Amino acid sequence: MRRIREPLTVAAVQSMLPKNTALIDFLEYNHSEPDAQKKGKTRFQRRYIAFVVRNDAKTMMVPLGSAKSLADLITAFRRPIAGDQNPDTLEAAMQAGARLRNELWLPIEKHLAGIDTVIISPDSVLGTLSCAALPGKKDGSYLIEDYRIASLPMANLLSSLCKDDTAQPRHTGLLVLGDVDYDADPDCPGSVSETPQLLALASEQSRLTRSRGGKSRQWPSLPGFRAELETVKSLYQERFGSDAPVATLSGKQATEASFLEAVSHVGSLHLITHGYFEDAAVKSIDQADIKPDASSSETRGLDPFLNTWMPGLLSGLVLAGANRASSNPDSPGDGILRASEIEAVSLQGVDLVVLSACDTGLGAVAGGEGLTGLQRAFQIAGAHTVVASLWKVDHRATAELMRRFYTNLWQKQMSKLDALRDAQLWMLRHPEQLEALGVQDARTRGEVPKLKPTTSDASPRTQRNRTTPFYWAAFQLSGDWR
Image 1 (spheres, rainbow, N blue to C red):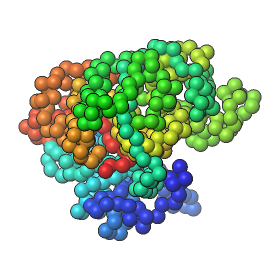
Image 2: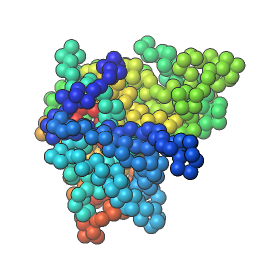
Image 3: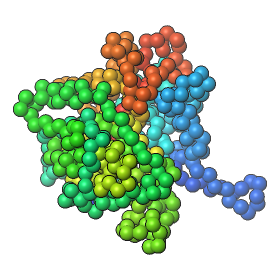
Image 4: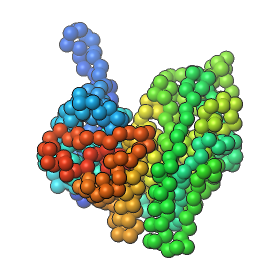
């Protein structure tokens, strides 16, 4: 945490970046300029700007225009993924993709000559965009075919990733979590000695959300992903030996307490569960400017500094007991592992966290907070790399993607970014083999229907021989890409 908070200079970033690698750091800011229609007045507008940093050229500042305009384009680009497939929506998505390439990417690409790897540090709604799925340089291609693309929740994490910390060796062993019983009895707050205050505060947050009129949420089981657990375990033991340590948390055993007890002793985590995000209407204490009021039923009894709108309480992972807690205001636990609880655990020995779940990358929708909710939490806790999904994923396609990712990583010993990208490119280029696996008829998490190709400039022949981004572009790698 101290290293993350240290000021980071351009020269320091340049010294950390490998050859042929660029950091693209986005910033949403309040732009001011004289109002042409009202003399002596100032006009304000939320805008984006990008800083392109590389170790062999001058750092460039690239204005990108209205934040609202880009947000609207991103929403239109993503809408078919959410299941809205009427012709008007698909046409709007194709047009939005073309405009995003022209208005967001091409101004930056002018400064990427000779670059093959881009590390993107997004801000706000830009974090919900899968840059890999943007149109590429050639007709019918995607940006993933032009660049190796990774992300960082914050640029300051570079110093932590690039520091050779031999005092904190990375652990061995694998923890897989899945097939969770969301209807079990939830944990009791305080059952984990390391974070009793945070667990109690998270439970209080859950009760207050309901008292403010929040809806009772019910998370469906994910039976289609049971095979994925066994595949990941099998690949790990094929690489590291049949006696390699593998821990499994499933059913009613997949509790907050069990997870927090086991998580800091393994090197790799593979988690199959739903992501939790608070309603966008629930703002953080900073955004809503909420002042603690001892007479208010919403703030009484809570830490006046943290309050109930602490950003880290607005996102998390759904674990055993979440359904029962959601429907019972008097439940002592809530079955939600909040980002704040994750941040409080030491994960400096954890090399890789894969969140194979619904929308686990979308911290932005949690009360309007910046995207990076869960990814940032795991990395602040010390995890080196996090792979998370940006939308609800098809279980058969995801199982095949993960099989290829781990085969590349463990058997072929590729870098993490290359292991994921190679698996995604295979899926993009082999739709017929995915069809043979029954992907087109598979039920997905959230029951998202299969999509038609949405690339704005792809010819019909090219589209028939490529897989829509829905199946391969959901997962993005955040953190150490090496």
